[in-house]
Length: 134
Image 1 (cartoon, helix red, strand yellow):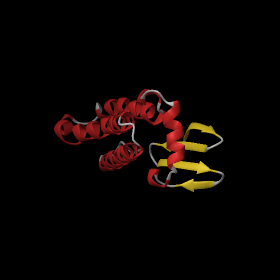
Image 2 (cartoon, rainbow, N blue to C red):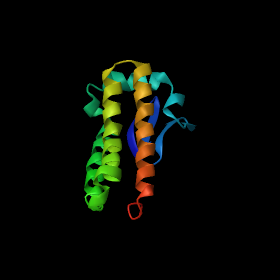
Image 3 (tube, helix red, strand yellow):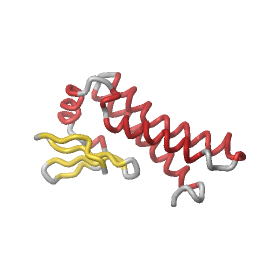
C-alpha cells in the first residue's frame, strides 16, 4: 500500500488491488462511504488540482501498465477484452478527476465509488485472461 498522506487527522492509504483503506487512531474504514467527510474536506482544501491526488496519479500509472500489458495479448482480443480493459483502466483516474472537479462532497464520493467499480471490473477482466495474473 502507498501512503497518500498523513497528519493529525489520520492516514489514507490506497491499494489499487485491494481498494482504499483509511486509518485513524487504529480504526479502519473499509470503504470510501465510511470515511468521515471531515477528512475529505481537509484533503480537498489542500489539493489544488486533481493532478495532486495520489490515487489519480496511481490510476494514470495503472492506465500505462494496462496498455502495455494488453500489447502482449492476441490480436483476436483487440475488440473484446483488450478494449474493455483499457476503457476500465482509463475510467478509474477519469472518475477521480471528475469527482474532484465537481467540488462537492457527495459528488466526489459518488465518483470515487464509480472508480472503485471500474477497478473491480478491471480486476475481473485481468483474472478472466490467463497469464496476466501471474
